[in-house]
Length: 394
Ligand code: PXP
Image (cartoon, rainbow, N blue to C red; front, side, top):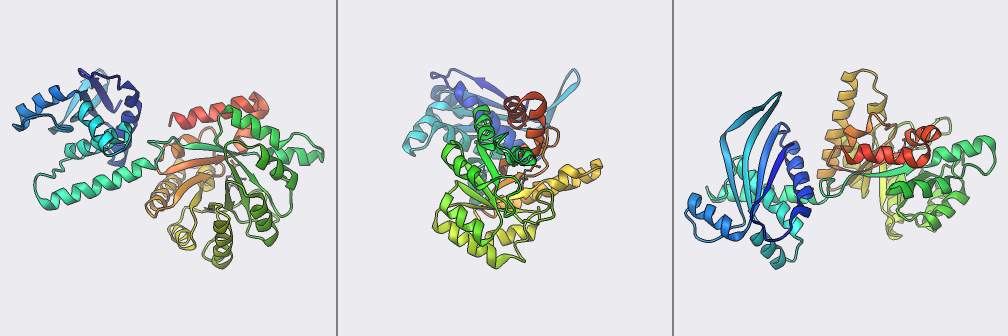
């Protein structure tokens, strides 16, 4: 429970902001590796914050935010739990609302900004110390706000479901069932925010008919996985999906085995991205969590990268799994800081997903096999909902 909230004398009902503020505090504590700390947030009105402003800062009138750090983080023991207190942040809802209106932004965003400002004060930053400190604090604040705006703290990690595996079962019989188009509809009804299909050159599972029907029926977002072959590029341009993900393709593989090597395929990839960009189709590239590949993805003009989570999921020992996870974590951070939007997937299941879903730099997870496998036993609707529960509670 990293943030304790008190709503003092608020004349309006601001409880709707509480979840967002709680997420902001969680995100900040995670980011600064202060997960075991608690922050107390007090929301009050202008007359009340004016009293604190007068008593503690000898200033007249209300202000937007006041921070009271504990000089030494206090440790309280509540039976078995040790809670370390970082300090108190007081925010005037009246002033926040006025400032939000003046700057034409949502109250939620203004509260996020003020929380970040107050939190940095708790960490010892002080813009009143010197001009240099003021600049440093302002820059850090700007950076954090930018990150907050485009990360899961404000928008939950999304789940896109790969329905290739349904087509694989159909193709095993060579008949028309089960239909991946129907499966996509069920996934969407259960809460999936995207459908992914890989139209392979060998058409081993998804067929041309599937992508055509999915284009007409998918209401959320259709992500077409594809190789950079002439034939498939033409199909993608004609189809106009919501996005494409470039993946490597080998005839002998059972599934996509590793990330696309952008460096060795730079020319082809760059050309494909140019064509997609002209058609306004955002491009993601499926890559291994590797700094050079991330740099290359920026260079060729990708909008997204999808980080390959296969090695993390396949790791046998805890040590290896942790190592692979930290590689994903740092790569996601690097990609995000480089201006890329970050997705992840491959091999994720009901045990391995939550840790990846908790990364605030990752927008969307692409999961197929685990969900379709579970659906055999519990039904597709339930399998999707169970995975969403894991993602949303991470
Ligand atoms: N992302 C990419 C690029 C893939 O090729 C696949 C597998 O088709 C997935 C994600 C989903 O992997 P899984 O089926 O193991 O969940």
